[in-house]
Image (cartoon, rainbow, N blue to C red; front, side, top):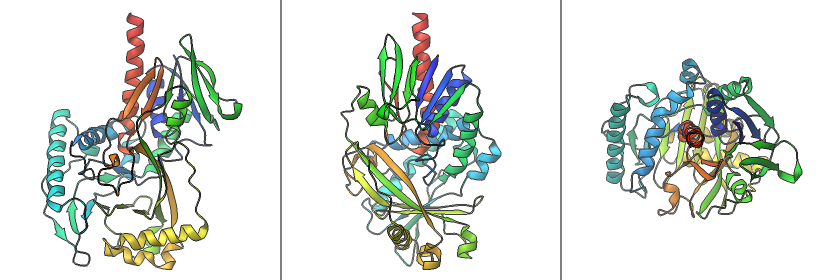
Length: 409
């Protein structure tokens, strides 16, 4: 078959590689000038096991993310070396539960114990280990921070340097003989006639054309708009935000001290801190400082901050995180803020309100993956970065299973 993939983020690239390795001809349409350059590269890289989703009483979010995380390395190492993967990993995360947490500490600990038990059960069932390494899934003794009163809980959860993964996967895509990449292609919609698909670009630009035997919409922020323009409007509520984190390069030279611990703040104070030693980069985000845009509309028009706004955002991120982790007090100093930079992109998920609402659907991440909206047209909701590799394989499996069924019939 000849298949068009809309979106050259991590999912789109992994779908392209998986299809090409199974003998299909792929045209990958990317609106930017390079692959995996937006949301898939500009995030903290947390490889979730569901600890942060204690507000989902169904436990389905944690179950899905655990299964996604257990196959993350297995799938990615089809395209990148184990050495590259290992260099991109961070140390484990502690979770910080502030005094004003919206979930009581005992409920969070009960959720953590449930996550631990499910992780251990699935590792045994699937004969897989989280990130290929032995992790301790067992109850943990809480530790109190004397300065803030917050409770610290250790976890085996880790992060991965997303930009390093992006470079390695993108190189595989551009070198593959069965994948044609077209850059600067902004897709408007896909149309079908007699079982064949054609791609129309915005403002009549060239680059999409066809015909294609199938179309996979793996765009990120613009996926719903393309679906709607193709005749597949979603009735579900969606909530889009633009989140900035702060990146400090050459962190050891700037700070001249040991790095802060890798931590995640939950639930009520929200943020992440992670250090990637191989590239000497420290990432930090703090809610609501980094959230500069939120909307329930499809039109996404977050404005770039001015230099003054960016500097204030960097300072306030570090100062905010210091309210739960005193190690960050030193980072809000001018000489550190001057060397830091903002990094971010859109976060799009099912929801109708922001995370300050305890009833927001954003406290869940389930039901993601590929959906065939018409014969030969698949739309892929990635969910979380953790879920990208498994979503890619699920998409290809669904498409080729449908093709085999058609051939048999």
